[in-house]
Each structure stands twice: as C-alpha cells, then as structure tokens.
Amino acid sequence: MSELTELSAVRLVEGYRKGEFSPVDVTREALERAERVQPEVNAFVRIDTEPALAQARESEGRWRRGEPAGAVDGVPVTVKDILLVRGGPTLKGSRTIAEKGSWDEDAPSVARLREHGAVFLGKTTTPEFGWKGVTDSPLSGVTRNPYDLSRTAGGSSGGAAAAVALGVGPLALGTDGGGSVRIPAAFCGVFGLKPTYGRVPLYPASAFGTLSHVGPLTRDAADAALMLDVISGPDARDWSGLGPVSGSFVDALAGGVRGLRVAYSASLGGQVAVQPGVASAVRRAVEGLAGLGAYVSEADPDFGDPVGAFHTLWFAGAARVTQRLGAAQLAVLDPGLREIREAGARLSALEYLAAVDVRMDLGRRMGAFHERYDVLVTPALPVTAFEAGVEVPGGSGHRRWTGWTPFTYPFNLTQQPAASVPVGVDGSGLPVGLQVVAARHRDDLVLRVGHALYGAGVAGVGSLTGEGALSGAGAWGFSRSSPRP
Image (cartoon, rainbow, N blue to C red):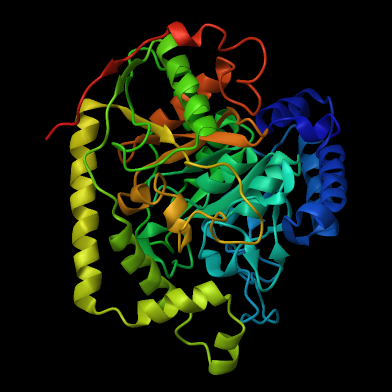
C-alpha cells in the first residue's frame, strides 16, 4: 500500500492545506489501488475513474486558490450501492432494477459530501437490497475479506468496509439496518458508526423503515467524526430526520473517557456464546478503558433476545421492497431474500404492531440503563469472519444471519448510536471489533470512547498482539454490578 493510500481523511486535509500533496495525486493512487484489489476482493460494483479524476482536479484548483469547498474537499469517498449518486445507476445488488434512467439525484448524505468537495471513487457492493449480514448478491457475486480471501467481509456494507481496509479512500458511506455498518467494520478491522436514527437523513426512505441508519466507515474515530459533521445536515426529503446538530463531533473528541460510567457486558448476561479469541481481545480493550480513567463495571442490559420482533419488522420490510416484482423478477432474487419476503408477506398488522410494542419496551429499558451508565460496551460480534459466500458460519446451527449478530440488531430497534472499534485480532489473525453503545442523541460519547481507544494505542488491528499498549492491562480491575430492575 503506498503512503498516500494509508493516510486518514484528517491527515489528507491537513496535507492539502499545507501543499504537501494534491487531491489529484491522492485520487489517482486510490483508483489504482481499487483496480488492483478489485479482482480478488470484489468490493466495487463500479469504479468511476474519469469522474473522480475530474472532481479531484476541481478540488486541486480550489486548494490552490485557498478556497476549499468544505471540510472534506478532495478526500476520496466510496458509496454503498444502496444510496443514490447522481450520474450513475443504483442497483442495490439486484438484477431486478434496470440500469436505464436519469439517475439525476443524490441521497442526502451524498449531497452533503458533494457540497464539501469530496471525490467519489465509485459504488461499493451490497447483498440484494441490503438484506443480510454478509455481502454477496446475484448481481455482483461475493465480496471477500481483505485479511483472508476465503472469508466474508461481512455485510451488508461489506464492500465499503473492505475498501477502507484496503486503502481505497479513507471514507465510505454505508447503511445499517441490523448491524450492516458494524458487522463489516468488525470483520475488516475498521471503524464503523451507526449514528442515532435520523442524525443522517435518508432518502428515498428504506423499505425496512426506521431500523435503517446511514453511517460512516472510516480509518478511525476522528475520521468518522469529521464525516458525521458533514453528512448530519438536515434534508427536507427525510420527514423523520433530526434537526441541526448543536456542536461539532470533531470538537467533542477531546473529552476523553476519564470519569465516564462504562457498562461492560461480555455476553448480554450469558445469552451469547463468544469465541475465546474475541472475548479476550474485547476484555483487554475494556481494561484499557479503565486504565484511561473510565469507571468500568460489568453490567448487563435488562433485556432478552428481541430477535422475534426484529424478524417481524425485517421480514415485513423484505416483503415491501419486493412487493411490486413480477414472477420473472422474483425468480432471480437471492433465495434467502425470497424466503424472508414470503414470510413477511404472511404477517398480519397485529403481529407487526406487537413487534413495535417489543421495540418500544426495549427502548424504555435501555433509556433506564443509560441513566446509570454513559456507555455500554460489548463485543461487536461473537465470531470473527467465516467462510465467504454463505449466510451463517458452517456448523453453527443458525438459520439466518441474525443468529450470529445478537449484539448488533437490538440497537437498531432502539435507534441508539453504536460503533464497532477494531481492538486487535484473534489467534488466526482475523480482526475483532468492540461495540460502543450510548443513549439516543449521544453520538458524541460513542466517538469519544472510540477516539480515546485509538489515542491510547488500544484500537487498531494488531494492536493487542505485539509489544506496547496493553502490556499492563491485566492489572486494571473493574467491578461487578447488576442492571436496575
């Protein structure tokens, strides 16, 4: 990987300002990298070489004049092929969408990045309509893990996470309806944030309703904060979007974690079997938080597995997104998507509303939990990346992808901000993610915790396997407490 493709967005902007290198240099190297890795990893649906270089030249001119368009002028970014980017089709991993059309509109997050001068490298892969936690589709095939090509990159923003991990742009836009930013971030060793629902406007609205969030996948928490400052601006097309942010997420990074009340739940109260390599890496990172001055307690949130309610809402969404397809189009759907859309079509309105009741109660429980704790920390996933091209790990006994993602989808139900932070690798050299969750509207706390872990050398792939950051971690103790009844 060349030097420029290793730099963060924050560092690129600094370099542009100082005249150390240009957006054209950076974009050219990112595009070359994309072309080189694409045949093996398959992270892209489309690489937009000429448009990207044209945007980079425009950015170079603005920097030369001392008139950057915004906070990420000249920074390469990729966009998951769920979100609209004007000038090219958005096919959503499906052979049921026609490429022909005007394609003349940007999604809100894309529009904000364009206003700030970002350079769009291309569209990244997704499973069909983003329906599952791995990335393979009838349209684009299988996306593979940069750390082991025989394994999955995760999903549904798998192409986005793989691109960031491989140096094809430091910023990527993904979507997360049940873990689809955090899952691939954990599997690929990058930072992935699911903001509070509505913090990043979404248009067109997702068929999966208010489960679906838009969020950044980045090199680190500082880049995610920079990106969130840009993409969180309101957009009139999203009726459920939140109002303007009162401050800067970048400015909030400086707060650190000293004095924060951190609840550490290793297995959601024994509900989840976690691989030993994952459990060890996460625990050592949590001990690192204690070493940074956080008040860490072992405490489990007060809820059982809400997978039944999640399936009701998710399967109904799958039925909705495929509702207008004819027989010939249904025949070419991903077989797993076809299964869940059929299950969703059989649901009644009363069953749907019962799932909403579960969701509201879960939100109430987590609201009470966060009166005691500023953040909740868990493994992002109980496993590391498994075989590519399958929905569930072989021999796991799981039927659907939700079987191995019990730490992620509950917080789509509650709409809370949550991030996956890379905290090392397991014994096979595969990345491990730690999940940080905060109360709704406290995205700043999630970013602060992630940033503190990076600053202390605790976060990052491989940071727990060598000399240094955690050499004394075992001495950092923390207490055991129980959730409020």
